[in-house]
Length: 212
Length: 218
Image 1: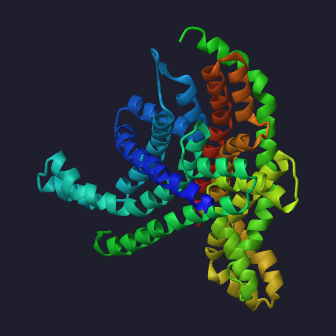
Image 2 (image 1 turned 90 degrees about the vertical axis):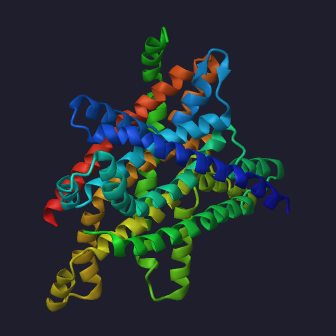
Image 3 (image 1 turned 45 degrees about the horizontal axis):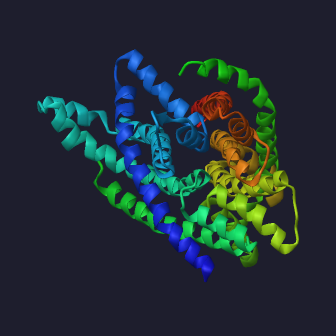
């Protein structure tokens, strides 16, 4: 019973870390995406470099750099802040690549038609390319979110009290280490199942409406 | 920021031992996990129900649970059933599980992508089912899966950084102990980050290159 209690206490934190870092990652992916798509060689190189660096260093290293290394005056990041910022930045790099791929999959006729109709850039992105790119991005986006849900466990290493942190504490206190971690594994699988089903459902629905 | 760069460069050589442990852990998990992944890729589609369920269990838990959970399961859990392993061996078992589960799916994807003409050709030549797998389907399937397997190997290398939570003396734990003994946390973690990046960024480029070369043949 205590086992379930430990995991249930950690569950909201796992969801919080996942949702916040996904939101941060999605927003922070946009400037990177703009850099990747810009004609300016320097901006492209900068974006490319940031993305490679963010993806080339393991998330746990980023979290430790942010949590132990960064101090603004006397101000230090809390574990939750460091966790969300670290995972969010890493997500931004992966998501920028996903978005770039989705945008380049939009048929060139769509761009040509938009300029032939004299659409402004805002209309082009908001009404033509944006929605179509988003539809193709959804399966990879949800797959990445499921990965991020599992990666949120890394925040336990800097003391964010989510599922793995709580299970770890329980295992140390009680000396019982099999059942608790199997339950934890089961909770992660149970959380990712609906996301996977949703993704497949959206994918089949979207396939019907996307022009190719 | 003053003195950060000299600190980092001074720390880099002291961490090579940890990097070596990280690489040993990566390679041994791959060596054990890849053959298991190949077995599991057939296990999840075998008609034998018991074998299939066992394979599905290993694949689903290995992919569905975070690597961190598997690491701690092996480290804190195995002593409960009277199996005591060193932290390096238990970490290797956990990452082998992850590797086998992920590569099973990647290999299955590669095998399914082998053109059906190859299988028909093998049948027409009168190859036995075993020979058909051994000489025709598996070699080509593995080749198709190679770029994604390389991509996975990079992620596995990064995942070994989590083994520090179960006291494996790899790069991350070395950075942490250096940081806590000298209070130079930031230089220590930056040095570790540089070493991780120095391996995984070129390795990622290699996997992208392999993918481009493969797509030329398909």
